[in-house]
Length: 118
Length: 111
Image 1: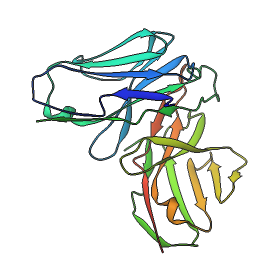
Image 2 (image 1 turned 45 degrees about the horizontal axis):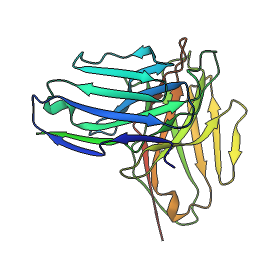
Image 3 (image 1 turned 30 degrees about the vertical axis):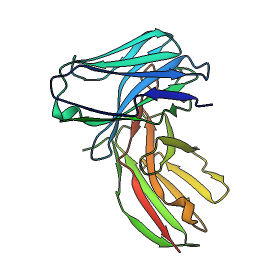
């Protein structure tokens, strides 16, 4: 059973299109994330949700809109795709948001969605 | 300057060798530290947490030096299957955990 699953795995689309990536976790975790890994392999957090509530929103263009219908799902919608959006997008989850100092919850990643904008 | 810096490598070592990676971080308020492993075209996976007193997990030893703000990973008796990219990760906990990843150090273990 895949713990964190995301679809599609590969997506090739034209500039200007709107696309969505879906993510589901069956670990019973409260917190979900979207990370972006660019061509230089730099992995950076985009958003984090805890129990459907947005708790981290990094400096991301507002063309990117996450949506969490319930705590097991976190989808990412991207409007007006640009060439620079080409990257691997990883969904992830953890038991909790790690509120206390020194607490860190292990983050489990999905297999990634390879987005290519042409 | 990146918040978490690593030598990108690649480190090319023969099987059985001992190899060490270092990582430095700039935010002295960072609370917790990890090494993740990422295989080619795969997702990152937690390798081990890093504790102030140092910790070991089989052939892997992690060390943390808070004063100098660096983290290390030592791999003994390298196996072919250790070939991967090793990501140094720092938890910048500012209310909620926010993992900051280094760009990774690539390890290639050859027969």
